[in-house]
Length: 108
Image (cartoon, rainbow, N blue to C red; front, side):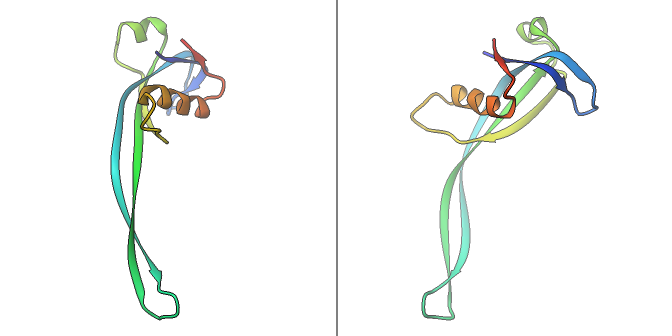
């Protein structure tokens, strides 16, 4: 599974005419956040916590389909965050999240 992107811009501003993007890894963390809020009818504060699943995907950028198929060293890599439904396959959801970033992407 991969996505093909026409005219993908690398960090050095060079353009890859038909880049192939493949999700290499997905990391999910159960992260706790604390926040302080005032108590009603009081000058006191209370600390509360919330827990959130945070999901990151690492994407490898290959120069063309042959490079991707042969797993040569990628030209670049990046990561992005996406929401995860724990009832569905995570890689499929990550690719759907990647398609939201690259709306012109083609499945391949």
